Length: 112
Image (cartoon, rainbow, N blue to C red; front, side):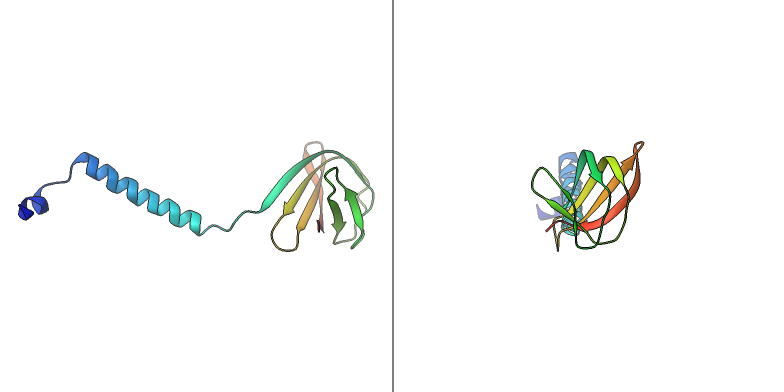
């Protein structure tokens, strides 16, 4: 009887279960090795920002967040932007200023 189990070819259902198990293990390994993505992106319809001076607030958002600059820049921007916030670490952020549907400049900063 044991000899029959060793010599009998596996059924299609058994093969499918083996493949599904291998794929699941591969997917779980891939997911486990990925860093937690704690970056969020927010579309800003309109923002006025004339200057970005180090450690000074450059923008205050409706939700109470304040974007502090970590560089010196004078973009004189009046229009849309994209805010990218990294919620891990020290709260690093980028405020990417848009013009004509493309990024004009990204300002480096933080949101404490």
